[in-house]
Length: 518
Image 1 (cartoon, helix red, strand yellow):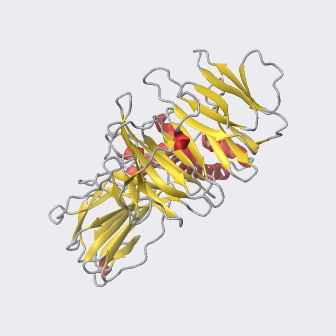
Image 2 (image 1 turned 120 degrees about the vertical axis):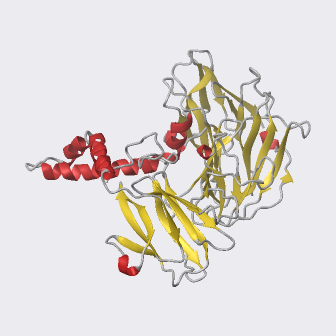
């Protein structure tokens, strides 16, 4: 069935999105629709057409098919809100939408009164003293319900799927009644009946079922007094065995998302951020070498020189690598400037660190809460020497945020350039360097989906960096190669030997590259 393709702005309609789905899930739903229509075109066209032509024709029919299917679904018998008595048997009926199974209805019924298509969800003779109910849902409705009691404790299903979020209902004295809210086609919400609820309920969703994580406010370094509602707490794997690096999207003052890179090569998370923020975010990449792991997660919190509140993250590894995922700020002169604290020391073994999705808060579109499996007290962290520029730091307008990075040029055997192809002058915005000891370093911005093929280095030649100006007069990197350029008049050139330190500073509109002797 096709439903998710159509979005409406009325929250009572089945096609209303409760929140922003990931682009990967949107793509899956579109591909599902296209596959169904392609097969139907093949059947309809009796003379036979090549598969690629059938798929092309089906692509023009997606919208019309979505409208027709949505109308067919709307004509089905409507389901209404209800209250479930959990001292009686509960049966569930499902509906398939875009290839995904959703809970269509829940109701109390005896075994003799079960209707066709209904499945048992709760056996009241076995399940007693129900304390926890786990709900798996996405942007269109509820997909899974698991009722746990002292009589039917079972293992948790590992349903960690893109776009699926889990939340938990619990009451100290047990849950006896459950209220349902529908959109007429399927169940949209489950909650403990108001007359039974004894605690204020915070709707917090997780990407896995019932994780053992504690939410903290990294600004105050305490657990929030009132648990924030409607949060979706995403995660990144920290120190997993196949981790090759971490990417963080930031505007310089705050963090939008954190992603760990490993065996999963899906890069659609970049497009998720782009679709919401445009290209206002800076992507900072921290490579991880074999045997390297994160030992400290720090936060920099305070008020910047332009009067804006700031909360950014910083990672430190066992090999002394320190990466600040935010704009440059000089060492603080007092506690009134800002605070730099270690807020978590991840174990060497794999662990999960949680953070709220940027659009799950109405007040701000950035990371406001973190979740740790083993919370610990914060401790002040000294300002890293590696973050102090070797050269004089750029000073332009007071409100222009600058980012700073540097790397050694000794022992480099390979470079990978990152090019912004979304603008006409196609600037080189960053560079990943590989060394003869298998170490890697990164300067500037770096997105893996914008990376070019690696360039092998012949250290008999210098690294030639060409700087040009945009039409507005702002410098950008236009050329980097070991081959000497044939024409040097249109650019400013840096000819960098392989025994110096390269500094790469940049803002949203310009950059500055310098090198100094070690």
